[in-house]
Length: 260
Image (cartoon, rainbow, N blue to C red; front, side, top):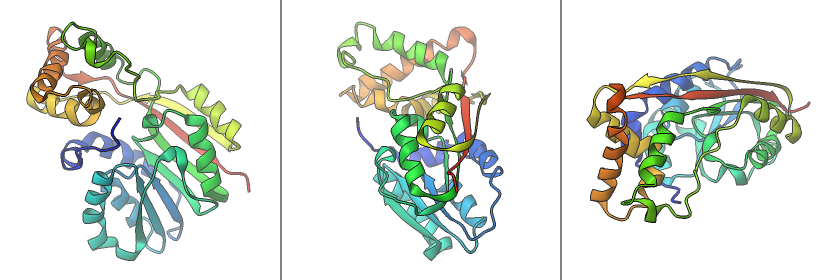
């Protein structure tokens, strides 16, 4: 699978993720001089909010997508200059050792399929007493969408493109996440799942959202653009019987501390 995203489209379509992220950001108790890793910075919209709360601190904005980082640089450097740096890295192969006072992340960890390795790397990246505050998709996240997409994937027109398909997400439970954090060495762990469903305003926006945010890895498997558009259309058609364009998001929250 590609590591890339359509960053300009994501920047336009990620208002929901931005709103959820601001709630997570409100959980941070910051002095203002910390060094923080934004693990999965995307286009930098939420990173800017984090930087505003760190007037004497620094943020390392990390993402696997070079397109995302390119957009984040353009968004952040004019206002935050020397307070922000940029790192292109896989979350499951973090290159840091005892560098950060905290790790902050939203809407990203579910794209890392090896959560034990993810949490071990985060622990190593933190200074003693450092914190992790994060949110990602978890539990039954997007279950209706996944079921309806699977129906289209198994149809005669598309089955040949998905013979060796493996879902690109890890939507873990709160219980398994707490155990994995503790196994990695974290203490004071808290995990919980909350619903955050929303409805897209029209079918055109729904199609753009699915193609950019949720099903872009599926579209990479379909070599013909017209077939890809038809694939998204077939998924959307399965929502018409409900008279709904609602996406059933569930957010997995986590707080944890590295022992001092």
